[in-house]
Image: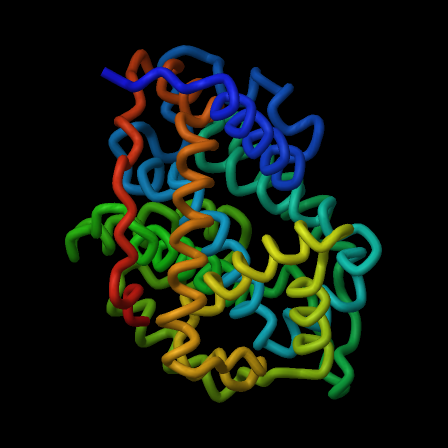
Length: 319
């Protein structure tokens, strides 16, 4: 039996839930019920028995994994040039976060028609307008299959690392491979090519990509901006805790060029306990997720019980 919360605890939970939902999903994100509740029996791109539904339902892992993916993606100079020259993240960072979260949640939990429409909108209406010349003189395009694969792999690698690092039951090797195989489907619909579909293929892909990666001035400046974002000291402190937790998900070869290197002692004695506390609060406040609940109900199923414990694993998946 679940213990009944006191009035102050209920108020705190409602406050945290509202603040996170507005920041991540925006004021409209949870109003579009039809994305997730209908039609009955439609599994979308994945379905309730998928590893993707399990991984993407974990609030702390997705939030910290999402920020980690932005940092990892920024290491590709052409991908970062597109963000730097076409995104309004400096003037309106929450809107970009809302768009990214909406895309991930919609393609994960929406009906097939809704998920495919979200992919088509980005592929056919957003990406054709994002192109230009990077500071090093090379042309770039958001529709470039090579860049699309990089952005995809960086994202899902970090989502999985966040899920496994911050307390969720670790996946088996076959489940990790199944996750990468599942999430390759929307990536290919978006235009990515040669998408790795197993943990070993992802690891090899990241090794192969390292010669192309570089921490440009735009990447370092962008991450510095996000790490210091907030309208008041409380918000800035919360963002810093989340960003430090996210940075810990990156492989060492990615942290140092982005100037995210922190000593092992600081990561162990400060960053990890603070990320642990933030994750506990997030999971307590955010689960059960209304969106996830609607998706399972669409399939006539009940969502699995939220993880009740919080164990920070010694290392994230090694990719």
